[in-house]
Image: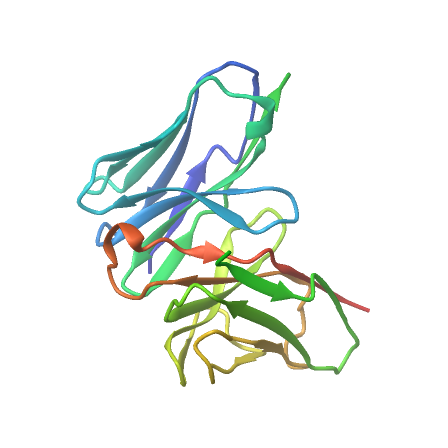
Length: 110
Length: 116
């Protein structure tokens, strides 16, 4: 069964810092990997989707990489802002099911 | 605007009662999903459906039931057999199969269920 792990569980940084969130998965036979943002008490908002054949995707200050063979993905956030404070979750898709990590709770201090 | 609507936002269940959570989408997606989220944890799959009139159990289906009579709708019933129903419930939809760059999973705003 696919297991998805996110490290660290929580992260607190000063505004302006660049940071990296990590996601690892045990079964490399994935269709894609998706990074989400979740604000407290809200649903999930998709940030980036990386297909299994891709190495990275970029959107604004966000860059996600995928190393399928080693079962790892990273989400890089440049020049962090207080508005980036949220929980970030990664999910991998195997066939018709998605498997989620438990998330990294990010706090960006002004 | 296309999206997923979950209702109600908050729901309270009395002991022994069945309650139903609504999920409606207008994204024309064939696949729909129900997840449960407990504090500090990731999402766990309850049920999913790839097509109308067909659905499969996820990892934690016991105490829950679903139906898929219409493409747009995928209601979840939390039965009295679910002894620990307090959680945040999220509904999602996507295009089934690989889908390429369109294969993004979209989520509703969630329903928070509590036990009285």
